[in-house]
Image (cartoon, rainbow, N blue to C red; front, side, top):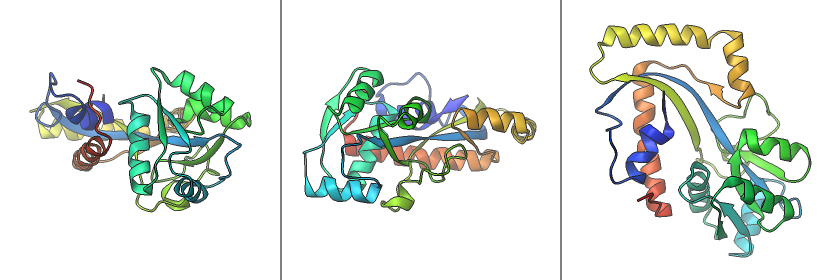
Length: 232
C-alpha cells in the first residue's frame, strides 16, 4: 500500500529517503481518501467556516491552535490558514491526545483532527465540527459540509491510500491487478468497511492514480514551503 505520506508528503518532508516515490513504484489503483475535521471549542462565536474566518480575521493571533508539528493534520491546517489569510497562535504538542484534551477544556480553540478520533467528541457536544477538509461530504456524516462549500473556495486536503507495485511491473499485470481490486471495492461489505473507517472508496485506473500522486505531490510540496515543515 502507498499513501499520501509515503508517495506525496515524505519527498518534501525528508531530505533523504530510501526510495523514490515515482521511479520505484508503479501505481495500480487509488483505494480511498479520508479527510480531516476542523473542530472548534463551543465557546467560540463561529458555527461555520465563514464565521470562523471572519472572527479570526477580526481578532488576529487571539486564537490558540493545537497541532503536532509535521503531522498530516498540521499540514492540512497550514494550507487552511494560508488560504484564509488568518493568523493564530500555534500551540505545539508531541501527540494529538493532549491537543484534543485542551480543545475540550478551551485552552486551544481550534484543531484539525482525524474523523475517527474527533467525531465521538463532537457527538458528545464537547466540541463543534465546522467542516471536513475533503472535496466531498462524508457518506457517514453528510450533515457536515466541506471547507470549500462553506466559506473557502478551492480548499481540499485529504489523505489518500492506494496500491502500488514495484517499478517495471508489466502493464498487463498492473491492469489485471487494478481490475481485480476494483471488483472487490464495488462489493457492499468493502464499501461499508471503508465508510465505517471514514474513508470514501475511490477506485480509479492506474493512470488516474498516477495523476493523483503527481497533483498531490505538487500540492504538499507547496504546503511544506508555506509551513516551513521539515522532519530532518
